[in-house]
Amino acid sequence: PSPRTEIFSGKAVTHEDIKYEQACVLYNLGALHSMLGAMDKRVSEECAAGAFTYLRDHFPHSYSVDMSHQILSLNINLMLGQAQECLLEKSMLDNRKSFLVARISAQVVDYYKEACRALENSETASLLGKIQKDWKKLVQMKIYYFAAVAHLHMGKQAEEQQKFGERVIYFQSALDKLNEAIKLAKGQPETVQEALRFTMDVIGGKYNSAKKDNDFIYHEAVPALDTLQSVKGAPLVKALPVNPTDPAVTGPDIFAKLVPMAAHEASSLYSEEKAKLLRDVMAKIEAKNEVLDQFMDSMQLDPETVDNLDMYNHIPAVLMEKCAALSVRPDTVRNLVQSMQVLSGVFTDVEASLKEIRDLLEEDEAQERKLQELLGKVPPAPGSPPGLAEVSKECSKYLELHEKASFTNTELHRAMNLHLGNLRLLGGPLEQVRAALPTPSLSEGESAPLRPGLVAFGTKGTEMVPDPSPPADDKQVLQNLKRILAKVQEMRDQRLSLEQQLREMIQKDDITTSLVTTDRSEMKKLFEEQLKKYDQLKVYLEQNLAAQENVLKALTDANVKYAAVRKALAEVEHKWNTTVQTLVASYEAYEDLMKKSQEGKDFYTDLEGKAAKLLERARAACQASEAQRQQLLER
Image: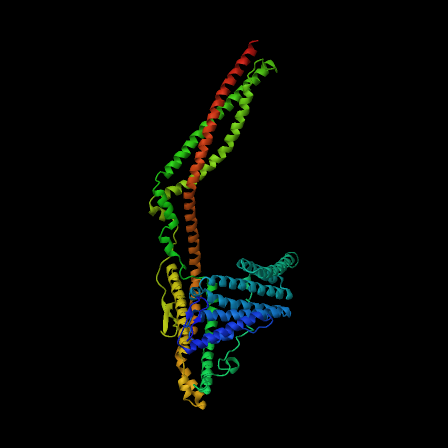
């Protein structure tokens, strides 16, 4: 066999299996159809998903990376999504009703969401390598864009029905989703950017107009988006069926002489029966999975972090880092206190000097007024000391500086007092740090009694679950919720396992040898007998799917009881985070406090020297002034 090149890895792959050759031809046929579709006019909704669908449902997925189940599912949903896009564009050009356009657009979103799920699969990510992120970003951009288009047309429908409050919320949602699409579209071609700008003009204009009309004219209450009925997609495209035995597809059979054509045809018919069985089962699985995904999304319950109790048993790493840093600097708090004490001392000295200067000046003014009252207003004597005016002016300047600095000094002391306790705590024993962090207080009582409850997922009979009737303590509520969440995951895992078993069983099911020796009239009976081998797996799957309703009901009941606990845990977690952030902020404020304290000391030391000199000048000037007054009195 000749080697074929894998698309994503570039490796040459060879299998001694004729089915691999057939699979490669089918893959290339699907790729060719997708290229022809890209070249065709967008008003056609025919798509290339048929070849990929046949390849996924009829051939093993272990041949190569590009033929894995996830990659083929990705291709199928991308093809269907683009075909639905074409139909959406045609419906908009034909001015179809707004609600129909919204449903068609919503289905585009559904197809791309399925493609995104395939891309998010860990197996797919490892297979695609670097291009996985680019593809995922592009698909997510399309999801937000077409969700915006869907809500734009739901807003138009609300406008037609004169539901002006609904119109506002739909246009607002469309605007929000379009903004998300624009964020994800960075790096896309200019044609994409131009389309987004045009759509923004349309939706932005619609929203502004609708909001203005409702605010000033209609005054309708704007409902929450989640209270409105969701837009259900309308799938109007399907994969074109591919029959590899159809001469119109494959041409003349070059191996006709090796195996009778009748056996080929019968094998193809049996393959179609298997594919139909798989389609029926997968339709049920996908419907249940969609309900389960929507339900779990609405619950917003993560089994890994549903209680977060473990976090309260440890001091967080960021806090440990600060404690360790302070442990090697034991004088941190003492240095800060000493620095602030020195600052306070200098501050007090400056304040005392300025007060004495001010008192001297006031006393001099008072003596001057008395003299004027005795002698009347007299001109200053020749040789009157001019220094008092300068001293007064300079004192006012220093007082102003002191007043401004005093506010800063007060704020600095307040900040120090705010952080000092936290710094002492961080520098102390770790037990005290842990004790300072909030911890949840959950009640603990007797376990709730058990009752027959969740139907098992196909193989183990009936399971016992806690009776929801009697009130349970907080810890029991948590345990019950986590146990049911584990059941949900167990149900998912078993469903996926059964699906994989069914696919593998179908892929390995080859009855060509039996068909060669079976009469045409007996084919139908042979098919029925052969298909019975799938009955047991189908029963297990049906039981698994049927169990979902009971599981979700139990989860709903458990979540109702969990609501109060969830609120309490959220409050404690908020307090915990706030406390941690406050302690970290105190540590980070230390250097800043020391720096500002040093700057304050430098400022006041300088001001103290100036004030001391000014005090000497004030004393001298006041003495000279007093001497002059005495001279006037003696005349």
